[in-house]
Image 1: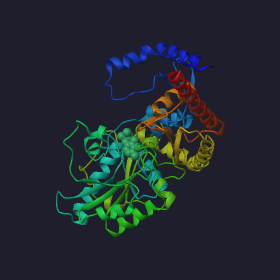
Image 2: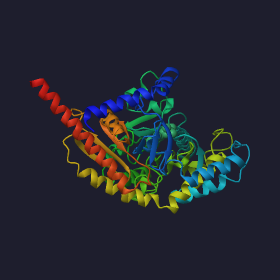
Image 3: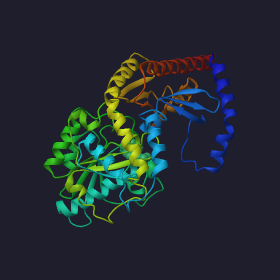
Image 4: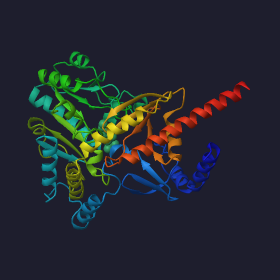
Amino acid sequence: MTTAARAAALQARAAKVAPAIALESRYGAHNYHPLPVVLNRGEGVFLFDEQGRRYLDMMSAYSAVSFGHSHPALVRALTEQAGRLAITSRAFHTDRLGPFLETLCRLTGMPRALPMNSGAEAVETAIKAARKWAYKVKRVPDGLAQILVAEGNFAGRTTTIVGFSSESQYRDGFGPFAPGFAHVPFGDAKALEAAITPHTAAFIVEPIQGEAGIVVPPAGYLKAVREICTRHNVLMICDEVQTGLGRTGRMLACDHEGVRPDGLTLGKALGGGLLPVSAFLAREDVMAQFTPGDHGSTFGGNPLAAAVGQAALELLEVEQLARRAHDQGEYLMAQLGKLNHRAVIDIRGKGLLVGVEIDPDFASARTVCEALMAEGVLSKDTHDTVVRLAPPLVIEREQIDFAVNGIDRVLRVLASKQTTSAEAATA
Ligand SMILES: *Cc1c(COP(=O)(O)O)cnc(C)c1O
């Protein structure tokens, strides 16, 4: 198809899908800027739009759909449990929560877990646990506990969490913010040590920064952070909402450096791509800070979420998806490495969490993603310049080839367009 024909087809499609987009736009808050595609079905690594056109999902809902869309085993767990018992609140015990927490602790090597729903809630739980631990165990004077965070962090959208974001758009207009947070540069262990005070309760860090543009810290960083936190009696809390559960090629991204954190947040893939399920996990003396009435959630740990979460974890183990993410990730990186295109400034990541940084003088990552959509590949830009590639962990090699070929074609077409417009300008 020529570029003009492709553009015309894209336009025709956009006009057809307009009703659904128009309704969303008319009645919804404009807090997202989705690609102009209306999806109505998903199966494995594929998504389908209203016209039945098939797309390869290279985003998997920001890593929440690690198992692919509507995995039969997970749908079965969901529907069976939904027909039996779904929501009870934590006012009562259920036969589902214990086994889920046991599996979660066994697979992560953490002693205790507290179930929540969204990733942001898991991080909020971590903050509460760290502060109370600081007052009760570390004996920090009341009200003075400080939590260190990394520049470029993303941990969700609550007012407390955006308060410690270093991204001005996430904060603008939403203050005043909770005090008690300070920034250190990401990837710099020396800076972390220099920032620690006697009042420091915890350092919250993503092992790889996802929303910041798939930023991988220098090798040895997590190990150094672990050592520094231990030496200063500061909790190392890893936010693995995005990097956890096999995404980077190990069960946890911390496992790459053989590091066990004192606190851990999980979410996204924990819900099997079907439900919001998150958890805060911690060592005994940290989790012991919570006593009845301190903290909770109406939906956290509900039997439906527990059944799906447990089925997701079992699938992760049985299908060895971490191993798979490692192998397919290496293949994806190798194929991307062959692109050899001037627009590609950097390719980075681990496992199946990969960012392709595009030269902003060439095109915005958004433009690339829109063009990829026309090629049948769905992804999402992050931070204007990075195309995120985080497909379901069940992706096959030929599907990776399809995605990389799509990227190759898109970059070539954009480059030829630029040449044409440059020629037109000189003519
Ligand atoms: C997505 C994300 C969160 C927030 O999860 P939500 O479910 O959107 O609240 C927290 N931390 C990290 C590292 C994330 O990527």
